[in-house]
Image 1: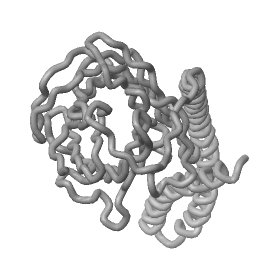
Image 2: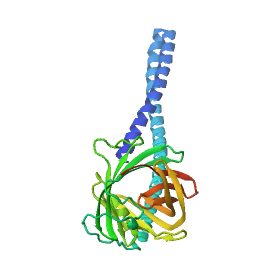
Image 3: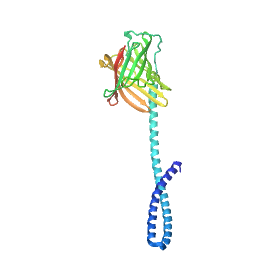
Image 4: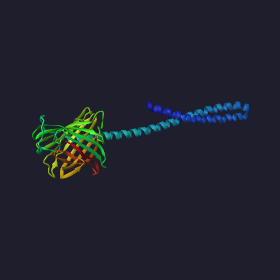
Length: 333
């Protein structure tokens, strides 16, 4: 018998024994009352009967208690073992599913090699005919608002162009993004949540390196990121396909990945947001994310403007329901 079973048995036994002993005391009181009514002589004999009855009652109670305890403990242990086996089976199934999902995501990411161009660190100012789908001027500050499906702001991000380096037709835009709360204040006053990353533009193609974004997050030690950059040509046309992209992130024992497929330019249209009206290229992409074994499928539709970047993004679940919106609410040059 295990220590836990022994403790449970004794606690249970004491509880039942107290209940049975209370019944024994009541019997004793009734016998004593009868003895007093029968007088002193009868009391002598009645006392013997009383003591014998008491010993018999106690032995009967003890035996009954022991039997009940054994039955109750055995029943509870069987029930606990059954529940434990069920939980362990469920846990084993979940672990297998997590491992399988992560292996599948890792395999898909490993299929596509990385290819970010090497850029010179010399300061550079791109000409207008080199503009890609991102802000192309040092010092520009853009604020994006994240909204729920009802249009309520849940958080904001302040994106600042810190520097542009490189040469003609091969340059990098160095960005700093600070996460803000729904009112535009730092989400963490003591230690601002800031992400530093680059957008590389070479020969008219914009490379958005998602693994670099994750890898630059301050306050996350031991983070490992890999994947393939998203590439968007500057000379997009309606119907043109966008290459697949992916990113895999490991933070300690936590694994996350995102795979973007079936990218396509759907239209060229004017989009009105709080920051103004912009001529945008509407791009749709399928997204598959895996976080700790949990899979989510959906679609993102993003409107990009040259020289500005993402003006608006709508995210839908796999059933086509709108789940969130990101929208440009201000630009400071």
